[in-house]
Image 1 (cartoon, helix red, strand yellow):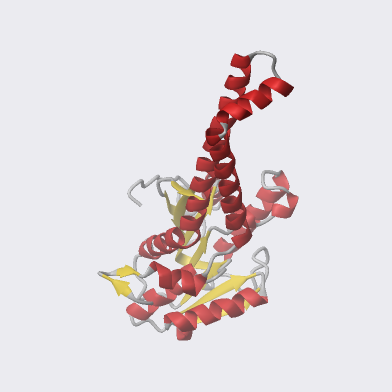
Image 2 (cartoon, rainbow, N blue to C red; image 1 turned 45 degrees about the horizontal axis):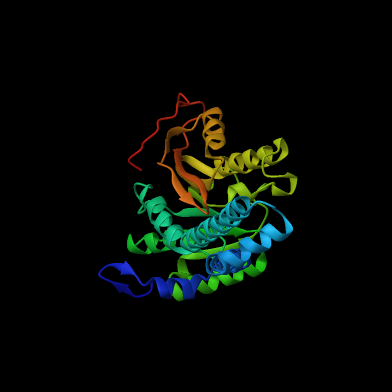
Length: 292
């Protein structure tokens, strides 16, 4: 998978392969950060004329005008710093963090040599999908991983990244609705998903009951298509406590939640679980494993 330096991926090559989703968000953050930087610089360089302007049009008191000018200058400078930080975190989360978390998710599955079928829900550009395929290739498995996405254009792009990474023979991509998975019960040995579930139901509003119900529906579908004894791993933003409660209700076993990871400026966690080998097996209790 690309060039390495002392065992570390060449990040420039990774960005070239996968690109950045939602580039408009990154561009928006950078433009606003630059604008606030320029404005704060103007306040710093032309502080005295600005104080005179404030005193002429807004304040009769010189001290009040200086305080206001200084306050607005400080606010613009702080806003610029925050926007640059947000842009940097978005840039880091878009590819390096996704790649790192993909490796952690792959590592949380014990034995890949016995995996014949795996599913990546919301495969997107294929960072996690290709990480799974690479692991199958390393173990000499004859298995395959299916990437499911809502867009046909995305799945075609993902197949191209799999070809670049040299794992195309292990990858299949399909267009489909994650709320109605086009697979039979107990079909996959492993089901994974990275930073996707929180987008389901967003047409109802992120924090509405309807959106939560849609997310739980997708999680239920993931459990349905997972084989008894199979492993599921989900990394997502904000809503992981909801997933844990739903997995408990579904009587999943070995539920583990990772430490918090800041991604796209919000909290995220990875949750892994195992489907009971038989129906109604498992206490439904959750165990937080902070070593994940």
